[in-house]
Image 1: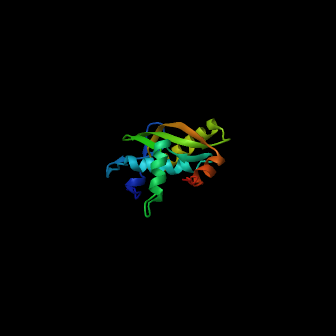
Image 2 (image 1 turned 180 degrees about the vertical axis):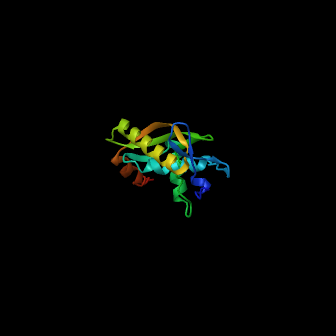
Image 3 (image 1 turned 90 degrees about the vertical axis):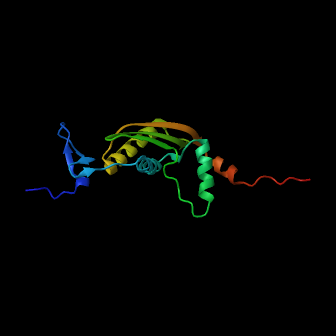
Length: 154
């Protein structure tokens, strides 16, 4: 009897007895683009409590300008870089943390959420998730950045 399971969800045994989604089957090869993995990682990272935003200083400024353009889409992979191989991937996250959050707990939560999302959605093994904290966000930072500049008197 032949299997009626689609190739995209076929399970390959890897010698450890653990089933993993097969990206290469007798019916074809599945290739996952870097942008797909970085978008998944970015969305998963933003779901973690304590992440104020993704990206370092320059990428956040460009992202803020981009969001103000009417009709522009949100860049979910801002602050995320990935290296994708045939079976494995590595992720680098650049974040701004909320003030008061334990950065070690935040990094652990980020790794857990990003790894789970990527492995579940792509079948790729995540070998590492490196987290770089560029800044800590204070509530007062938002208030001062939204105030208009004082008028000049001539």
